[in-house]
Amino acid sequence: MKDSDLIKLNRPYESEHLLLRSLRPTDVNEDFLSWFQDDGLMRFYTNSRQTHTRESLLGNIEQGIATGTTYVFAIVDKETQACIGTIKLGPINHDHKIADLVVLIGDRRFHGRGLAVEAIRLGNAIAFQEFNIRKLFGGMFETNQSSFKAYTRAGWVEEGRLKAHYLVDGHPVDRILVACFNPEVFPELS
Image (cartoon, rainbow, N blue to C red; front, top):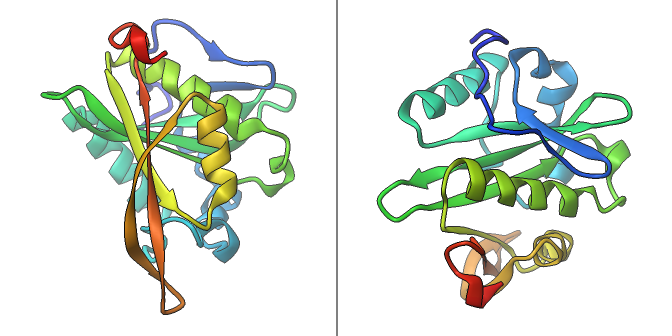
């Protein structure tokens, strides 16, 4: 994957502090890879047991683009132009026009500033405007209240719970199901 092989967006997606763009191979450096080895960051990610290398991550990104099912965007701090996290849109179900949206603020120096809310709102806009998604969905550990608050502040709603869905340190934990509806498709839910 070359930096020139980026997904072309119809317009810039930026907020007060952030901009979203396609993730570039040059973004995937040692600092970036360290996010996926950080137990504190990964404790709430259901696929956190996977070992990621630069090659495996870039391969997954290329495969997602090639199949049109998954896209990864860099969350960039506007002041420093540093990639501070990622948004993964997908897998996209094109028949139903639905997709998952996963946000990771990997650079801990940017935690606690409300940037996840900004990033989720930008992710919503890309999903709805660029990919014509009608509904975004996701889920999180009940114990991950910071994630739940970030998504709901960004316009998502709780749709339900899967009781005792996860086992965390041998104890059952609910999965909270959240969703965000495209206001062009569902104006009554906006």
